[in-house]
Amino acid sequence: MMSRASKRRRALISVMLSAVIAGSVQPALASTAAGQGGQVPPSPHAQVRGVEESVARSFSSSLRDPRWRAQVRSAALGTREVDLQALTGRAVDTAGGRLRASVSAADRRITALKGLPASTGSLLRVRLGAPSMGARLRAGTTPWVAVAAADDHATTLTAYDSRGGRHTVDTSRIPERPLYVLDIDVSKAHRAGMAVLRDALAAGGLDRLPDKPVNALDAAGWWATKVTGVEVKDDEEPWFKGGAEMFSLVTGFGLDGKVRVDSVDMPYLDDDNTVYYPNQILVNWSNYKYNLADVVMMEDDDGTNYRALAQALTTALLTVTDQGTYIPLVSALLSAMPDSWFTDDPDYVDSWYTLSKNSTGRLNGAAGNGWMTVEPYFVEEL
Image: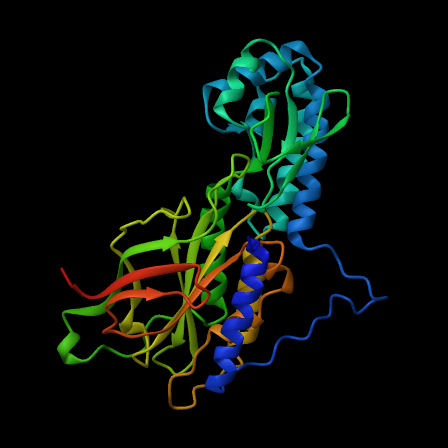
């Protein structure tokens, strides 16, 4: 079976070839990462992963304290995800209390790596790997601790025991030993990240309001494209995988003839191979000069840096000029993203070319990883 990374590399080649045929490939940004001594700095994903691994080791060692272990057990059995910083804050005079400073520092580091404001707050979460582990946990078995894998196709996880030992866990089946999985609250990070993305795009001039009134025919409202159904196809969600948050970037030329990008949050897209019926507005056509726009769907994960994403988009797309006709912008958007976002990090999901105000019915993504059904929709003024 083709891995997710391979699918996305193939998808990138596919969309770039499509753009070549259309004569609109934009030059990729020159990479300066290896400019000094040939050293390529770790990707944001790798850095976030390193922070999580450090916390996992410290957390597993702290479970030697029986009182703290009981507190964690009670919290993990009582809710799906436990805020680790909040939990350590309540653990007075235990190993958990002594862990709080390092957990708080890790939260701040992850927040910075994801390009989020300090006001985002705690992000690290702990959950029981699977409900079936509950019986052994209640019986007093000391659990191991592992960091959630970002890759759906990971075959193993590294787990740490309370003595500092490392263990390889086979992901093809749920282990009998209880396992705490350390992860990031992706929903919380995503909400903060979307605000950062919108603010940065607006500051870069890629998210402007229309600068001229709509015509008399549409004076009482505006035309939109509405998503009535959507599905993302991928392998079934494995037991060790944490949640994901989806969003789309709608690109086209604004009324001033400059490229604009509108971010559209899609938080309901929780599961692969599941059809959702959101009836969600995707494109506001009163914002666009031409009757065509492109859509790129993305997925947030541990390593997504929203500030870097907005900066890359602004740098690349502001160089694209209006040539008096519609130009596909997917290739320019994709070429602005770091290479790692198409290999280990599952950020790119799929893309759709040439949506128009009259687009109706099922539209398959260029990468073959998803589809949407859409219809025109007139939004009336109150």
